[in-house]
Length: 379
Image (cartoon, rainbow, N blue to C red; front, side):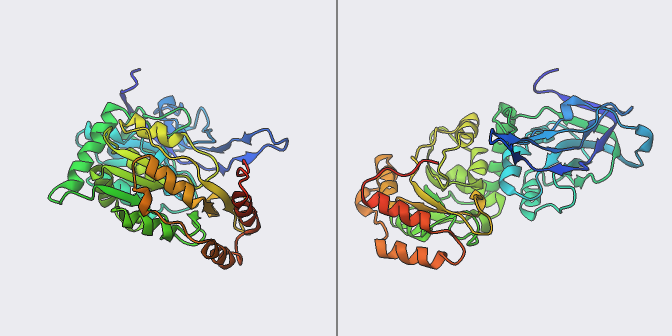
């Protein structure tokens, strides 16, 4: 079976997931117990079709090996493309892990739609997920499978992904995305050459940087166009990412979307918001033909929300602003003379403002340590 093949199941069956269990720490502290979800593709007589397996980071896809085909009541006549599981609550995981089979849409004619099932069975699809799918495959109906369904002709393509589930570049996937960028650019002027992708417009509890507006201001003064991807449609985002020559990203989901259209002649800098550097971004970007991103980690401390202790997705990150500016300058993204860091009193006032909901004591300790020349604490 070729890695680029598209299998056809005649009277194939798609089942949704009837269970979701999240990953959880092992009691002994030795790693993570994988989460699990069900759902999959089956042959007409009820045997599990292995090519339909869905892979999702830190999870296992655990459908039964055999189902009773006589119990399948719903039916779709026609030709349908199988996408597998879709993350229906988190845009970043959707765009980084769930579109690995979309490449086949350009190679199959007369499709009647695409079928998928949701990771969280009891939750609706997020509008951001549906908006991206509608842009990428605008002419195909999107059909969510919520009960076992027999499908007259079910096309199951290979999924281009890394072992952990993250989408990987492949010539067929690159061609697919290039055609979408061409559509997004059609009749529109060239976008800005220098782009800063900011998180400052997100909700207060939405994984931001302390005083990120100061980064926005600095980058704008350096000639960068500052954008907030959460208020942009997928076509506009992809067009901007494809057109820019220098891109600076506040670490987040936008990087996964950028990876799909990355070019080797671009320059990319990542402002990390966690105390760890995650290699998945570099792997995705380079797999799609993009550059190796640069940028050291300048997080002094994370301010965790009291209602979500330890949750990176709810934390605000305090940066070493001077170190970030120096790194940007040394990497060729800005002029060092034009970078200004917020005053200590400004940072203290912002920490005061955040102290109603966030744990600020570790951040203050990190500031004192930095002022005394001590190295930052390691995670």
